Length: 223
Image (cartoon, rainbow, N blue to C red; front, top):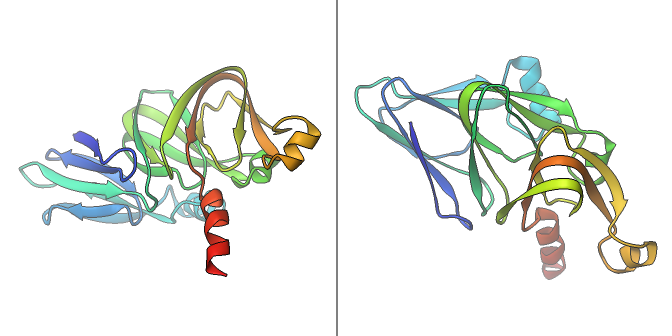
């Protein structure tokens, strides 16, 4: 399999070339175009009850699509996300784990398992929901995830404050807490309010724009 991310960072899409016998699994509705001979099969996202949990609590689709090349030559499928922004490909080896916030998952290849996990009230308070998506590698594979705007990778060693709606993915070893952006007066009157405090050692992925911010900017213009 050969995957190439194009159009970064504003209008990213993934071009996946599948050799005979290869498969890529993608979020429902992610397919932009595909070779006519490529086989597509809709399956539940990890079993009925697991798929139901991902749909209602994790912000993911009940069904995912599996694209398989059952022919004799290379075939292509192009995948994209609903919002304009960046997409990242993360190679994963056996035992690797990454937590995704709702709506970030796009596609994967190889032996990757997607499960919903309790995110805690901190995540809910920061506008990300009570459930997160946990991706675990049983073997080698690649994970594709995206967000609105660009995506920045940061290595946390200690503490990092992230504004609500900007956290995309993080290492599960990191702890999330609710905190004020600054002092009480500055937080309440400076427009930042409460933020997510990320504590520990590990990677975080942060989006440069937020849908909540876009909605706040657009709403007054439609009145």
